[in-house]
Length: 171
Image 1 (tube, one colour):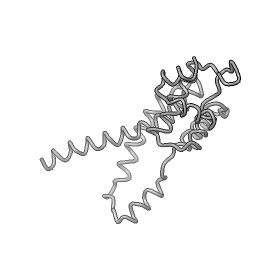
Image 2 (spheres, helix red, strand yellow):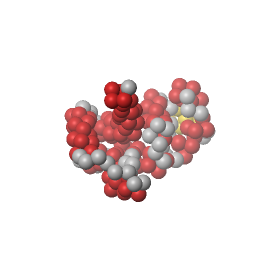
Image 3 (tube, helix red, strand yellow):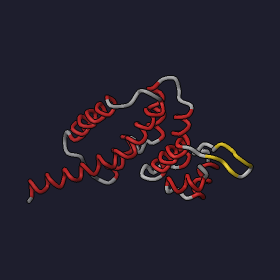
Image 4 (cartoon, rainbow, N blue to C red):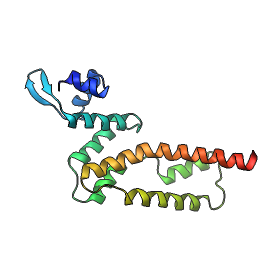
């Protein structure tokens, strides 16, 4: 397919596709002339990944490049590969989050960190148990998209649970 067809199929403007090509986020198509190239389903899949990384995930172009590079040139160890992927999309660390709470004068209830940690360990174990291991690409995709797209879902579910708990307690 030509770049215009790739654009139509994915909803990504041609100018944006060209930007992704220049930034090496999207692999080149097969050249058919000096100004034309053919694209295929691998380009469609890559564009969807790029859009997820730069859109809902909120990654910078540089961070997205690191993730894509990890997919294209994976280290030998799956553990190391997943670490690279998780690092590329990492947000603030625990120390930064605790410091921000302290600076804001917000005190967590006694035992809150233990409760949060226990529940996060359960979620993490579930995610790791369900991670695909058939290919490095599938594993990185699972970690990256699972991190950047599931975290907002987890927060939304937390808010819904808080609404329910608030209604039970105060309603």
